[in-house]
Length: 380
Image (cartoon, rainbow, N blue to C red):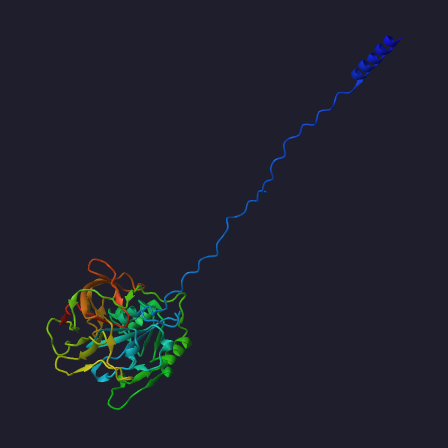
């Protein structure tokens, strides 16, 4: 009986083991990746705020001198009497650049004023326009100011007249003989011929230009390509006294022996001007009648160019102010030979050394003499 019980219990245990479910395996899962930063959406490369250019150097483009602000106003070119009987001139000391060249029988000056609105002193005496002075004014985009002009005469030489030059170019100008006469005035009478009496105030020049419909402003500030340096030092020929002769002939006759002398002042670093009209007349300093000061210049340019006397009734000059040529540059008591060029009437002048390097002017005003090929200079 006992044995049967044991066998029975054994059978039950075997049956229970056979019917039991096998243990389920733990489900297999992919290992959890380590957390990562989310990938940002594509964006444009980061931009930096634009670098602001440095403020332009506030200098007068004709002198290199500091100015409070640049102006987009056009410059003015003024025809100024240089006859012996018209001395003294007025307002010439304020010109940034002063030209002197021949007209029939004498020389005439033209002042270039970068900012006429800043001028306060009267300018005069005002004289008539010549074709080549208009062409010089065009080098600076300058409104031309004059009283009268060389008119057409019904000859083959009319193309050299100022009247035709204005007609062909449409150049802006203010003529004290025509609609603008009311802006000019008689500044002196006793002892002066009628042609030596006309003056104009700077504010009236601007007022007249506006009334006549001249274009008063430029899209950009003036830049005629001049380079300036306060030192402007170069080693050249010593030039303490320079005399430029305007004679049309190699012979110094009484009529054509006009010369201008510029003497270097060591204390100021400027050239002081003196002139003599005619071979036997007395000389006189270039003096501004507004202030009594002798005209003084940091830079002196003497340009040689072909000049001829035309065979018309008035013997006008024909001056090559476009093209290229040679000349001299003086500054700080030193002088060098230079080359000048101006391809068209729309271009400014370019000045280089003989080997083609642009010259650097001293900071200050400039005197420019345009003399014939037969004219010469004396240097001491």
